[in-house]
Each structure stands twice: as C-alpha cells, then as structure tokens.
Amino acid sequence: RELKINRPLANCNTRASPEGMPLADQVRMASAASNVVPMDPVKLIAADGSEIILDRRAAMVSGTIKSMLSGPGNFTEQQHGEVTFPDISAKVLEKTVQYFYYKLRHTNHSGPLPEFKIEPESALELLMAANFLDT
Image (cartoon, rainbow, N blue to C red):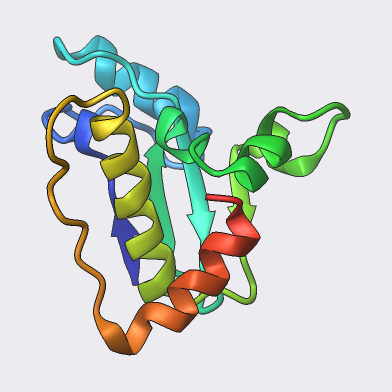
C-alpha cells in the first residue's frame, strides 16, 4: 500500500516518467510538463513498508528528518531522499506528515489557529513519534 501526500504535485502530468528513474527526476519532469512549482520530494517509509511522498520543505519541519537529509556526511538518506522508520506505523506516520503540512501552512499565522484533530486512541503513539522526530 502506498500513501502519497504530495499536494504541490497533484496537478502534474506524470505519464512521461520512465520506470526506474530517481524520484527527484520524475518530479522535475512532471513539473516541467505543467505550470506547477517543482516539488523536491522526500519518501518516508513506515514500519509496514508503506510509503509517503512529501515535499522536502514539509519534511524539514522534523528536526530528525532534517538532520538525516541535510546533515554533514554522505549518507544513504541524503543520496536517495528516502528515510525508513521501522518503529513508526503507517497510520502514525501519515498523521505526522499531515502535521508537517499544518505547521508549514500556519507558521507565522495571525489570529486563532484551526484545530489539528488527533484521535484519543492514537495520541500516545503520535506523542512518541513526535518526540523521536523532534517535531
């Protein structure tokens, strides 16, 4: 199962993307074929193998992901733009990514913030993931 959170890429024409091409090149090709601002994609992989593709700006909300993707050194995460989280479920990772976009959208927002809803039964898992991700 693949979950994609790629709002900036939603209107892109992706049929020209050859299989096997790196994700960043596929996005650049799709963006060039449309009038959409290019997205610098990052792939987050949950414990069950589910993938979430999101914009790098949203991923950088997490201090942990930011360190993995832009820290010193030449690590696999930097080279491939992929980060695997073997201890975070797909459901929790998806909600965390929704929060990344919420935080981006509402940073420097004036006035009351809209509620970011969290189901009580997933609150503890989300808290642990947020702590690990430095969000």
